[in-house]
Image 1 (cartoon, rainbow, N blue to C red):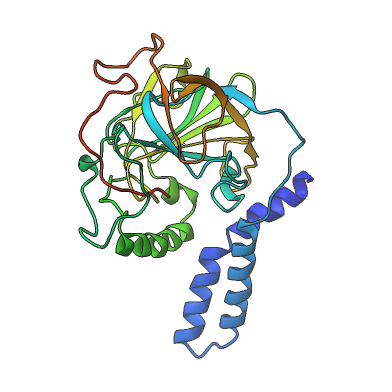
Image 2 (image 1 turned 60 degrees about the vertical axis):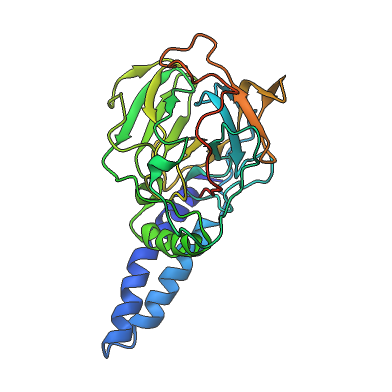
Length: 297
């Protein structure tokens, strides 16, 4: 798809907020013309979220997993593409990683109605180290969004859906929460999102090496429980970004070595391999506190 078409799609994605404002204005004033104009703008913006701006075909980029220990891959491109249901904001091949150290229980996405929400500290993934998956230079760091309570119950998921639509009105930054964007040495950009408030150890312009701890897992942005959202994209800004496929250089499933992308909500492990920043007790397979049944978004 040409650069011009990509810019049109990115521009249309900006119509959601003004379209909503115009519809509200038309509904509460006598200016009837505002309602159809606002509706048209809103529909164009929403439709643009599902448009895939196709780049030139390319092989998956090999990266290191940004986490250590035992995790579950949710919303994985190994299961479906686009993995998060939309192509917007470079999410075509994005993956969500949930820490699940309990080897005796399967991870579940949604609990019953009570309690409707829990503090993020109740989850074993909260505060876990997050590592640079590639060599490169940091180009953006956001660190001030709060870590909210979970949205992993039935009422919580309903609230999350409504909350997500509101966040969407104010741009992708509100969805991602605290995040870090890295310009990869080989071209393209790596994104790590939903990070813990104030945990970023890097600043824009700083060079990082794969395996270096750069932040901690959090529950900021459009998130139902603490997890790490990871994706690659072709440009540093989200509105016009195209998702780039990737593969992990190594991990283990049921003790056997694997490469590619974990999926099927099967737990996988990735050991430290001497990577800096890993603390004692964070190796794969260790049991920590029992996690609750949780979901991710």
